[in-house]
Length: 287
Image (tube, rainbow, N blue to C red; front, side, top):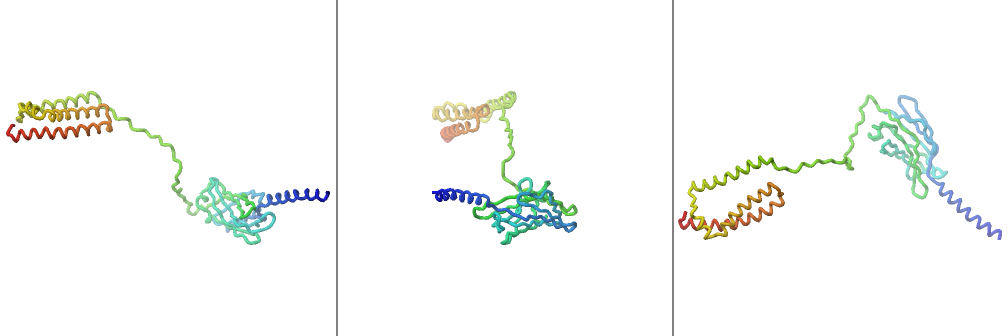
């Protein structure tokens, strides 16, 4: 019995230890150093770890080179990961990755100059943040570790970097459109003047007919030969004028078009028969 009890107590303990080791296994690094090699000043060397970043801001001049070296580890063992990047990011979130060259022993390094940085990062008004990304395939958890900040010192005597933002599709500002006011009728006095001018042409038309030799005596004969055609044709002319008046006063284009179509067809057929009756009388010598 005591041996059996010992077996039951040992099994859960081993499982718990295995789970703890698995949970603690993650990619990290050690022996991290950042070196600023300058042609105009002494080199600056700062150290960092996966738990403590460089406290001072690293200055990168136009003739300087930043070199980052470290040793990557899986858990506590030095090893080369599948991915190791130094990511330089500005405050807006725009970033540029720089892959590290890593040996089988886990020792890796990368070098950066101002020429390697995108122009968008060169125009940043605030220091850039440098982070290390170490990860690999498998169950081991990767790591993203901010390690130091970079302050850019551009060449004042050289050309300033320029950048034109590309066209990006996204939400536009709200448009407040002011529609044109509905058309209004002219003043009544103007409408009255033009209406009287149109009506004045009616008696002038009859006077012109009489002067040119119109035979009023044929009205009764014309109505007797084709009463419906003459009446409908004359009525369609009056109705067409009424349609135009309604369009002027209240109707819209969609209302007037069907009415014009009906009146036009009626005037065409009735006018053909009415004019045919007039032609027959003229061929008979009646003027």
